[in-house]
Length: 359
Ligand SMILES: NC(=O)c1ccc[n+]([C@@H]2O[C@H](COP(=O)([O-])OP(=O)(O)OC[C@H]3O[C@@H](n4cnc5c(N)ncnc54)[C@H](O)[C@@H]3O)[C@@H](O)[C@H]2O)c1
Image (tube, rainbow, N blue to C red; front, side, top):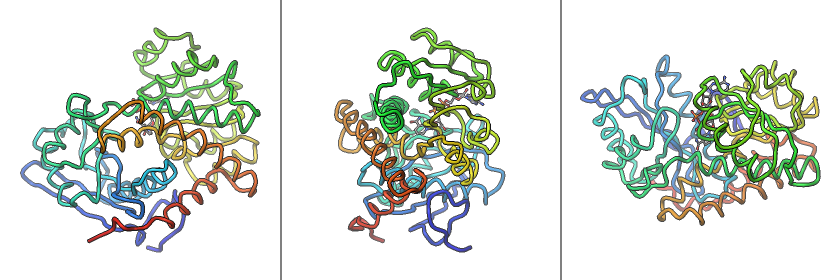
């Protein structure tokens, strides 16, 4: 495997500092931790649980996700490198208290070089169990010293990032009257919709295949509901916000979107790097996902010194300045925002002392 440069490469190799596998036949645990970088401090990133097709798929996911965390954490201004843990299993079938206790023991062998958090397939309750055997655990419930659902500050950060996008595109950070299409009314998208209507005066059009998720939003604020993401992207929008699954921006979607900007929380939105180019060619500004969705990891990092919501919110609010700076840099240098974001992150990592790094 050859080492490629830049966030988003499908396969990574020699770039990672440390990759460790963990197996525990007693509990059925099959897991790994990938530490991409500790240049800025101990690595931080979520613990994902997925029924991977095979071991190679698990390895590829952990390597890519941990690298993405290095970039996200660097851009968020955190003194943390990037790391990720993955458990190979079906969250609906394979979870047990013993499995998560074993996972905690496995992570603890790294002695704090990797700090875990929640991710797809793991819950606050699972993180509480991991914490019993591993002190380097965030994303815990408030009564266990954690901050709870990180969707809270991810949504708040998205709101600030959208204001920065508006400032860059329309010259004012007001979102009043802007038509914003939200795909996915979950922990992030649902809260984002409420912020946008209530605090910004935006007109939100929303979709989610689960009626209950939509109902929760409709109970709180007036929004227009459409039946599918497909219908949403055929509508003229000011901002399109994917907040559901990865790879939401396929070539087909990029060619059909009728909007000024894309700004959403879903991780790995670009189905392929070429999609960013197509969006730019069509005059659609794409705000990189790992730049704008950092609120959750900032919330998790804020648990380490002891969580304080006001302090955490203050840190997350900085995503406004970072987003604006990256978009202005991209414009000034004639490069894609994706590239400008990657350059900012790489510069910060290169300037990192690496003082934490130790084997
Ligand atoms: N929660 C966080 O703190 C956080 C932080 C950073 C990034 N993200 C990313 O943001 C995205 C959303 O996270 P979340 O925590 O809100 O997840 P979630 O599971 O709470 O919500 C996702 C929602 O998307 C809906 N959905 C599924 N398929 C859809 C489709 N085809 N069209 C429209 N909606 C669809 C689901 O029904 C669900 O309600 C994920 O990609 C996640 O990785 C989340």
